[in-house]
Length: 287
Image (cartoon, rainbow, N blue to C red; front, side, top):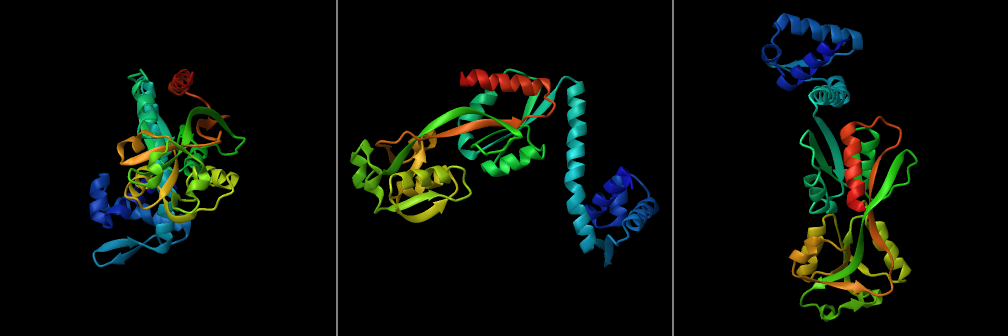
């Protein structure tokens, strides 16, 4: 088995036609057919079956494609990255939780003065980002803290918590309230796989209140939108997106907890020059 066979296989899987795949690969159809047969013999399975004039993947072919496609994509990325580095250019793969994507991350990247560095940016939940970091799909992530000895975490930004209500809500006349004042109100919160949900649950538990959860949502702006239409109240971190919505942010009495986001990266990996420069840039931004 060699790299050519794997690329022939993935191309045929995409084209589902030997002649079209051979033309795309700039080889003859007999050469492609021979390569696929050799691959099937080595794996001892049938990868393709005929369907009219075309061919389609068998269940073994689908499984094999699922396994090798990410590997080939990663290989292509590595080859391209090496080429760029040899030219003095480099790509950093950055991951971040969505709530940092409106302001913090764009400002961080735009203020990084290095024209030879480009960024591939990905947003998601903290646990998903950490998973991708450990697979080396991401170089640096900005997320909530996760207990993992293989990862270095540095706090970079903190946000206070507020109660938000619609502008015409009875509580909107207050600048500060006790959490007990929302106990009997419809409560909108984040989904359980959100990194911020445990902190909100902790605040409620500490206040010894059990509000009626009417909705669980993923996006900050969606939570704010539903609150703005008087469908409930919510506890949220201080973010610029809420200043754009028809809601009132109200301080919470007697709480010290804040939402902290961290820069995270693997401890025992080779660090490129661009990586180290960006880390230093983040550290200076924190200071």
